[in-house]
Amino acid sequence: MHSINIPSGELNEFDLPPVCVVTGERDGVVFKPVKFSWYPRWIGLLVLFNLLIAIIVASAMTKRVKGTLPFTEEAWSRWKRGQALMGFSALASVVLIFTSIALLVEEKPLGLGVLALGAAVPVLAWVFFLRGKGPRALRIDKDAILLSIPNRAAARAITSHFLAGLRPSAWTPPDGQDEGSLDANGAPVRAVCARHEDIVANWACPRCGAFMCPRCENRTRQESLPLCPGCWELRGRAIEKPPESALTAPNVGLLLGLVSLVPFCFILQPVSLVLNIVNLVKARREGGSRLDQRKAIASLVLTGLGTVLTVTLYILGSQP
Image (cartoon, rainbow, N blue to C red; front, side):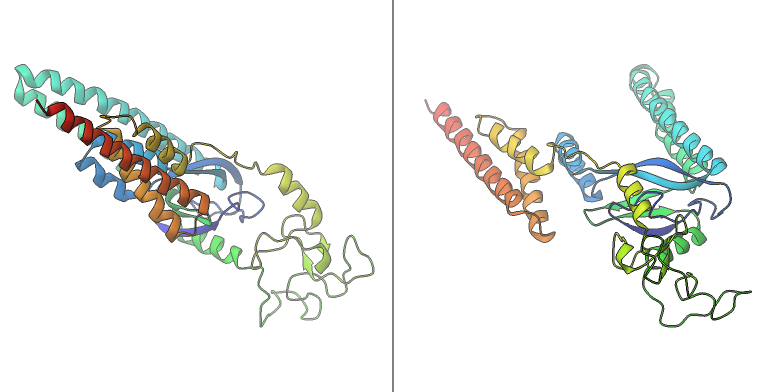
């Protein structure tokens, strides 16, 4: 597997090259909708202390993105089939584990065998039907999504594409072209802008081929390839902006802090403490907003007050 770093907002057909992420092919490529989710893997360590805490923290810190990626039809079908089989295997695993619990009471050897089978089914499904069949999210943050894809050529093509907007210091014409017929950006030397006929074009739109001048360039980043005004407008209409959700980690932490004020919330108080410490550290390290930092601090104060109130009432109630 090979890693590619896709800038935020560029997981779409306008900003990615038409190269299948599974096979590296360029013919017969279609952009297909994809969804990815990711949460920090250290959250798994919380399972050793409290399963409920791990579930709540993972739910609050899970990040999701959706967009489109280039696939051939065969690669897309194979990847989706693997995902479906993985889902069925997870369901079968749950059924087998519950069955093994019932069998352990009367037939321990058979119950242990069914339990082992239940644990092995999803692992085998992943190895044989999903591993190396498609992309996988390694990290998601506010600036980029780090994906792992099976094909090295596709990874190189996508990485190069994201830097293709930088003007080359040295350029040689492609085979069969006269050195004076094209400029370094692929536009004819004497071509004029499609929208400004009195200005010489210096770029050809990578999507539609229209010639454009510097005034018509539209870029997502300085180093990305420019799009012509028409394709840029189409991109803005086609790309769906993700709705702002109120269920963010700082908001969940604040809610838990408020609930923690209720005495004897022995389960929610440690959950609130862990989640809000994580929120505060994350907001300070990643340059989060002051509002998020204040929410985390306020939630920790509320959790502390709730804990003190719980301990005080417990001491008073235990006195004769």
